[in-house]
Picture (tube, rainbow, N blue to C red):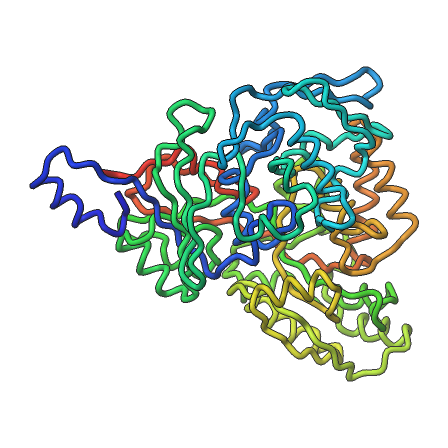
Length: 499
């Protein structure tokens, strides 16, 4: 039954014992997604709907960020680390009823690699130079060099039917995957509903018959909805909402350290951001703790290039000299770089409450150094389009993190990387990133990514601001939900609602 009709349904079942009801979970998110193609989406509201619910990869990531089998039952790796043989689960079908096999896997990887599709995930599979289908349940990947994060990278590559290999638009509005839920309806400005995949390969899963993602722009409306039982989940809520909901009767706020991050992005193809001294000066003008206290209600930690949740990789931001706020030092660097102040620039702002609040504090802090920022608040579609087209001076956004440093660094900061919207190029960074993905020794990789973090922290095109606490509000009628550090709603497959 839906949580929003719980009381009415309970009364009805009292009078009509044994009447069947549909188990529906209503979720509220702040806006409609920009699209649903798993190889093209980047926005949070697209990812929470699509990943692990409609679509799955060969591998998956559990709540401890460990790699687990998903559509591949197991895999074998050659001694030289260049050949990966994946054995697929048998009996898996797509939501259109067609069987999922190795040809679909091969086509999905080629689709992500395709320049015509222009997937932001392309760099995660570039080392795969040959794909061989040996039988319907076996696919072999050959790499051009050892690729340490391949199993983690494949968790983000959804398997789609082979017929969509060259289709650039078809999956944006009507996705077709293998996951526990299948796309049912998209009502513009209203909701997206997913139905139970009755042919899902895990016996007895999912328990829900329907999941509805309601588009609810007003935070106050979402809060009332979760406390009243109209909504069962509010995923990825902002710190203000989390604080207001803590202690509310009938609501639990689940919290974990987020591997996603907020950042200030700089377009290095535009002056004066092409000068590393200017990028360093901007870092020196920021007071990250003041931003966290003022915009995130203290719920976060200053951000280096990697989340502290990645305990085996992340350096302590305290070691970065540019993280010590120094207005006069920043002014001197700007003058040294030939920047005349006041400098008037624009900043595109991701339409989320936390990023809007962060943008306002950053605007004030940069003004202290003579940088006058005009904030451009955009709807999500326009923000993503301008981001992809590098149509910005600066931007403030929140981006999803990854369990392995390569998955974030290579696509974002490598010259020509698939999400290097900053137009950043640095030969030393490129060399380290090439070495980091081909080195299999853990200690050696750690040293490489330490170097990357130290250089990007101050001179890179992204001033990392904060890693917050990831919060999801859960109504007491929802049973079995577990929060994941990557923000995905993977555990919906296990959720039931109270009857």
